[in-house]
Length: 611
Image (spheres, helix red, strand yellow):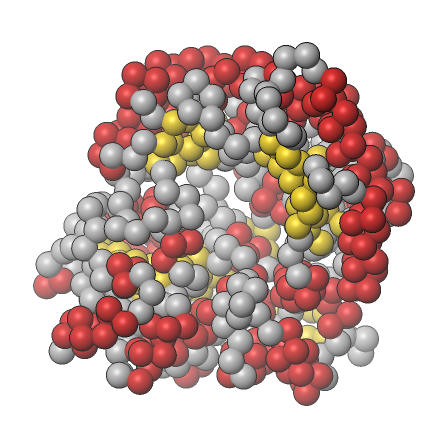
């Protein structure tokens, strides 16, 4: 029996509580009364997956239906995977401890490109054929959603259905259709032909892709009744959308070990490098009453002593101070820490600082992204050096003696002066700190993270090349030479990791073979430094005749058909081209509250912009 096998081996691994289920808040049902079983798979370890808000929402939403049962599944770490394979333990759901190969759906959330090999590995661990063409029966249907589905082409050989956009409505529609057709004895092909009629459903097998001699895409032609363009799903009434009253509370510490309340969705800013800022549009807010009620419900049901207000930019909430006044009344009384992880520099004020440190200080992180005003205008960051220094001054006078700053290297049009500007800005922050009469005792600590720029689909920089590895390394060395190691600590990801991310982010279907062979050669947990092996990937690309630079380092023309052009996220390509041209002219675009930039999202869904 599977449960006995698990119990026999579980104490041999790190953090066995990752693999046993039974946590407070987990949902167990009588499977004899269930029409559809859904395995919600996060293709990374439990500690990361259990911190993901989307999984918490869709887990609770699916289980709110009596005839559906959603179970959680995470990628086992290397030690447990070895034991599973040696002892014939298939991948299982945490709620039932039963093999997911017997479920109706195996669903993956695709949060980052470097999890793709884990998707294949989890299917194989489950005892399920990794290629969709080899899965002939109605079940299990393999589905995937999440931000990476805005270009899912490198996974199209393995996934039956991609869900584009927000899942709260479309997921239930898909499961309802399946329940009906399963009862009627439908085949997999019959089900897929009906499923493709649901808005937000992309079935890659229903599209034929052809290529030009130069390797670019010639055409994408739909068949079997599939739409020419697949539209993403959008929740229009965001204030009344389903939100869990409780979360599953892990036995072990997770990356974000706290209650999370989503206060808004979308972004008004339009930073030209930021994929999330465009694919999550339109901008929508919850009412203060809804936010307060969800905060109380989650804190009281889970026992968490910290609550995080989640969004792409929480300080852009239109009534931020009024909302925080309402929340602080509750959090102060209950001794709950209030965290605002996404705070804009230009919205950071003394009043806001007092709110977020009223119970217990949490760390302050700002994202200037570029070291000079010229480059900040290119990327449309819309913040000035004066605003950066003003935010730091407010923080220092409020008792903070450390600040973390996020930057990128290799941005379009970047020069050495821009790189040196990061060090110059750090020096100005240091001088500011020591010039203040009312500042914390002790030394200042500045942490700078300088990630490598990765061009992403559905951004104005989707056409731009990624800087070559040797150029990034040169700029990293330049930055090291210009910063004060006594005050500033520098960090960045391995350049090789950013290369693979760029390849997969803008890849097409021809990368499916590379993904499969990389996984077969042992590539898993590619986002983990201790597991990532770029030499294996490089060898696979060479053996298959795939040019890395074609996907990562090539500037793309505006006229080229991109692998994702048949997917509609309602931000028009014309707008992205316009913004790309403005970037090269160094012209910034105001945020959506100041003026409409004509991205197309509200026109497409019949809504109205702020003006």
